[in-house]
Image 1: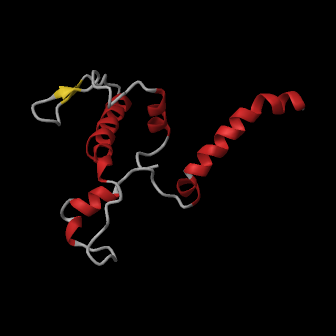
Image 2: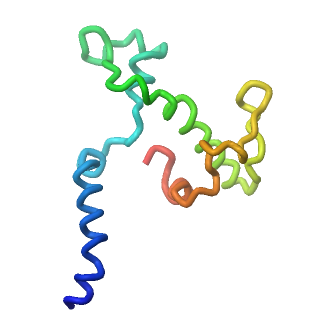
Image 3: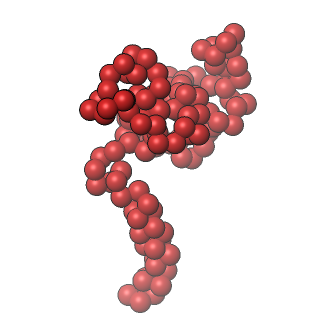
Length: 122
C-alpha cells in the first residue's frame, strides 16, 4: 500500500493544484472560456446591461483571441474530423486559410480528443 501511495502522490498533488486554480469550473459549472468579452463588446449583447449599470465588465481584454479565433478554429477542425474529413482548409476565413497547418487549430492535439467525447460547451 505504501508503494502505491509513493507512486501516486505526484498525481494527487497535481490534481489538487488544478482543483485549487479551477475550483469554480468544477463546483459552479462555469465554462473555462473568457466569454465576457463577447457579451461586453459585441452587438447585440452590448445593448443589454445584464444587471450591471453600464454593461458587462470585460475582465481581461487581452484574452480576446481565445473567443474570436482559437475556439472557433478548434471547433471547426474537430467538426470536420467527426465528419471523417481531413481538416486541410478553412473556407470560413477570407478566401480560405490553411487549417491543418495552423498551430492554433491543432486538430491532432491529444487535448482536442476531449471534443470528441463531450459537447463543445462542456
